Image (cartoon, rainbow, N blue to C red; front, side, top):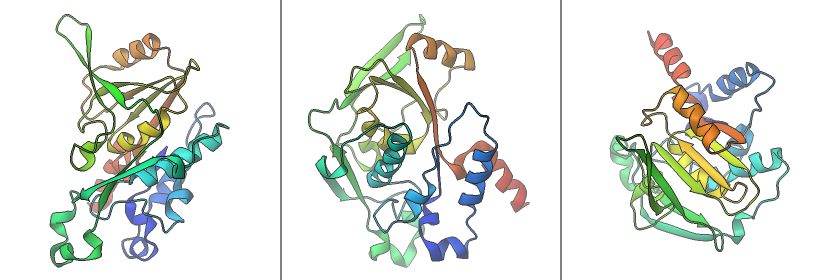
Length: 246
């Protein structure tokens, strides 16, 4: 699942800066082997006036994450809880990492961001942030999956997580491994409705090897694997942009 940059949702802005999210996503999906299924969320995220991307951070909101979740559920033929049946909470004003660059626009509506959370009734709202001890054993610290007592995007999963085990709300024998970065934080809480267990690996912070990931797949009997990332943040795309700039 590749996510377009937030600017793609703004028709005028995307033309001004020649945003190529759609082109890059299509090219990458077309290059996939037959065993890999593309979850194309581009249209769902860009053909809407809803609050799907933060204005001061290049990341989707909880509503954007739910939009993508709905596309995925439809693709695999699963019925999901409508967003209207979730309990919504909103934090106070949120300033993303782009806020300092807004200058005179800091006091305008452009800078108005909220972190919204959505939880289902009786949802398992915890995960085990896992680390490997010196003796090779794993240690999991139980913490809230979504908590409005935390600030900003740390509301989801506590922020900088390298490896986490998330118990789901169903007993269906299905385990999803999600490899991704910040967008996964607000996406995973929705996915607990469909999977018994979710394994999350953030490649920015995870220090394990490819063999370690294979061991995790075998240990947790992973049935599904998802790569979830903003297309502009993929290493391949980043290297292409550097070459173009030069």
